[in-house]
Image 1 (cartoon, rainbow, N blue to C red):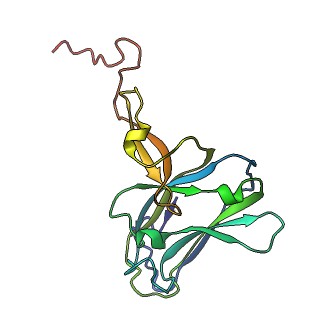
Image 2 (cartoon, rainbow, N blue to C red):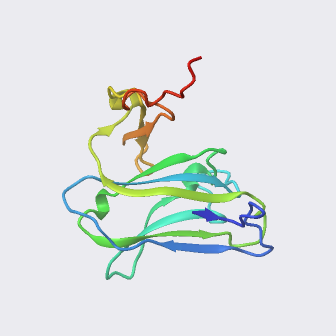
Length: 188
């Protein structure tokens, strides 16, 4: 998903911009460790610190329990100062407090004004909720024997000292594919 004008690659409309993205209702099982992950590429008005008191150009993620009037903030882009530094970054959020409830997730982005909106904006991909095991603290704890993947410990944004193992496929790796999979029919 992209927040911005695909022609201009910016979210500068000359006025303030507000977006809300609402998920379907999820049934989150009880008594298991749950993690929400998504990929984020974000270049917006950069905040001077995570404690910045204003919410200009901040992306928030809320969990709204079914049947309740309140929404609980589970993450905000203040943790990354509203930028991912020109790269895709995996975000990992521990959902232990939400286990055993039904509800939906809501992304909210609001510029609150029309100032400094000539930025590329926000891209979201691979939104996923999964049970997790095991927790980790370092990349080394996640290593496996598969040469076609790169493992890393993705730390929770709301618990920066712990995380869970995340595996990324190595592009064009064919070690586990059938024989001749990599044959390009060129004898040289």
